[in-house]
Amino acid sequence: MILVLFCNRFILLDFKSLKLFGIFVGVLSGVLWGLNDVYINIFSIKIEILSTGLLTIIFSLLLAAVQDTSSCLAIFGYHYFSSPKTFFTRIRSLKKIFWVLCLAAIFAGPLGMVAGIVGISYAGPIYAGVVTSCYPIVALFLAICFLKEKPTNLKILGILLSVLAVIFISIAGERHGGSKTLIGIMFALCAMLGWGLESILFSLALKKATENHSSFLLATRQFCSAISYLVCLTFICIFFPLEFLKVVENFFMIKMLIICVMSAMASYIAYYYAIKRIGASLGTTFNATFIFWAGVFSIIFHLEKVTANFIIWGIVLIIGIYFATKGTIKNFKLAH
Image 1 (cartoon, rainbow, N blue to C red):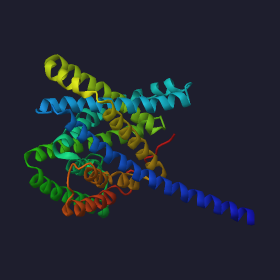
Image 2 (cartoon, one colour):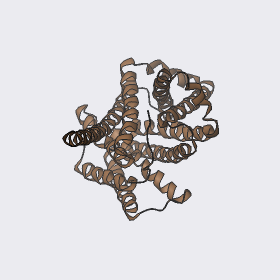
Image 3 (cartoon, rainbow, N blue to C red):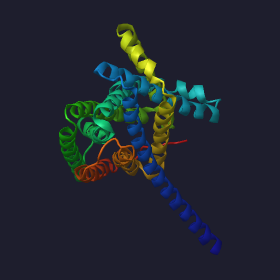
Image 4 (cartoon, one colour):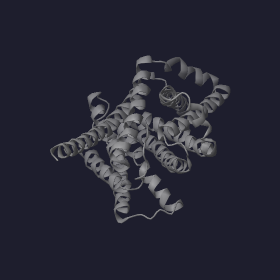
């Protein structure tokens, strides 16, 4: 009996430690995302040639392509070396949902990621981040409209709090930064819409997939995004060769690229691990704290000043995201 009780206690303690570790990793995903946003902003400043919208878009396409391609190769590499005999069989099993993943990739990549980077370049990591962090709210709203999901009162309250917080923070950002900040917020809204649509399509792909590893599906989605970036960059290279070369000549700052790629990749992995350990609602909420961490890193690197208005409404936004996502995608799991 003592041995059984001891074992039961040991198992309980182990479960608690895993949950605490999941919370830590969830917060870490937010820290890394905040760091990534800030370094994207620093990168865009260091290039010093982004004087026109086209140059900024080319820069954003290049950086998004490098980040998503690196992440895709890392995840595929992990799955290949962990089970090389079944790797290509698993890829063939995705035929039925491949076009859904392709569509999700277009919304997440050229629309979401590129618009997000342009938003950061114009509005900075704080104000652009506030808007893009609301993509779970967009996903929930779309699920209510098109997937006939029945919202609870808590979810409706979460949506209202989040929308209200974004409105007040955006107004403050426009007053603080002027017309460029407003342009950045508009691009951030496009990113928010793109990631919201991608979330819905990715969820549909998960339901239809025979492949249990959501990280494998994510890598496939990122592969499709990488192809879409290549198509866009080829088009720009043909029709705007001078602008393309101007950005490429200044793009390869190795230190900045490594930091951006590693922080983005690690944030992805930490986010999905947190979802597995502590659930989607808590994992998404801790990931959304990147708004706070972007503010902290912006202060450390002397990029922006964080106002009391931003702190108050940022907290309201995180609470709203938690309420809205609580139980929304409770069956979403990451299997290794």
